[in-house]
Length: 406
Image: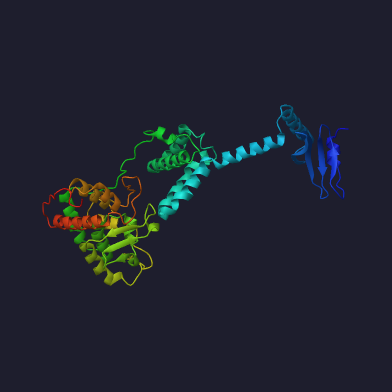
């Protein structure tokens, strides 16, 4: 006798599980606590097996019978419905594990510990805000260039062109990680080269003409503002660090006797510790500043409190007070100034320059250089650079011979 909706609804629990049968192996299992579970009893390979088909009332009698008929259809084809369900679940789990968001978070977890916190937080925020809501749940192998471009167009539409370019770079790194780990065939972000509008003013303003550099250095020496800011202005061109790396300097990182500054990895953009050899001129500035701020934590404390470093706008504001326009120079521009002149004017080996800029540099065997790589040559380069800047500041027309720090 087959079941009816009323019979299913009125089935009462007992002191032990009760089976209320329908037909073709389908039955309702009524538990002592009142729960009602649909089950299908069948035989496969000579063994009796059970298949769960849901719970009542979420799964009604009609739905349970449809699932039973689907399972019996598999049996007719020699397929075990229980094993088929396990395979489908495994495939679904694999698709979820290989979604764009899952792969991106795995990539981020693997590499972000080596990045500065400010750098890593910007990357994950871009992905969470602008990418994951639209393609995060898609299997990474299914994401195509037009879908990615649609995400980037949304970013552009709010006037954030630079963010769109950075998001494209982030996604490209995720796709390439997926390729390297065998979860994608290719990186579709490469198809979008040239698809985004170029960002005007994408490079930091920098003075790279030696004669103009001399004028800038004289202006820094003549700065009439706070002494801490003046010292930061004078050190920035000597050390060519990123502004955040300079302004957050701590005295415990600096050994004036060894003329060396060891910056921990958590404060570097790429997360790797960095050594900055200090030329004699840099040591002299720091010794003078130590008398004022050496009892505290920060080399360049803020104007209002010693418990924080100077603001990220302090050097930029000082340049503006000195009459240097926004399109002429910036705090970050000291790096471009050093890179250009050391390479094009002084003829220093590019790998030494890039390493001192804390960029990713690899040796001929493809291995990343460690922080002490070529340290003697970099010490020599930093002293030559400071000596060269002194001559420019004095107004000399200096044309050094190429290859000095090679």
